[in-house]
Length: 114
Image (cartoon, rainbow, N blue to C red; front, side, top):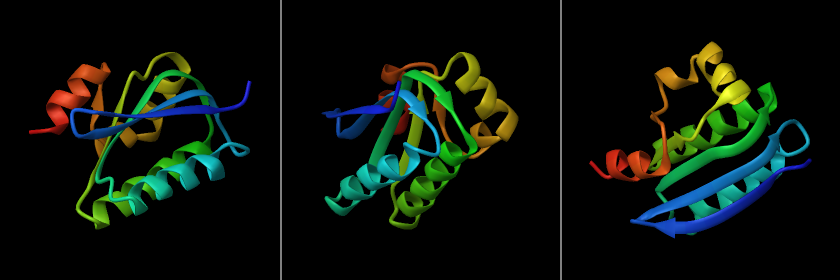
């Protein structure tokens, strides 16, 4: 299964629900979609990984690139819905130490607006 991204607005945030696999094949497309959102003025983005089945190091690098771009523009990137292998990869990589990670979307929207 390849990657699919569903994008919608919720409580002032751009929510990107990422499904499937965020790997070397999907990472460039993921970055392009995030960059397009930032070019349209989005500064608060939540990545909902509730339906993400797999993430590779290329996927992690693309998230890092997006987070840096957002931060340099005064924005914020939050993550939610990590589970299973995806959560394990984030825990092992230490990404959860410098990116806000929330159990679910509601927490991400509530915490992120403070």
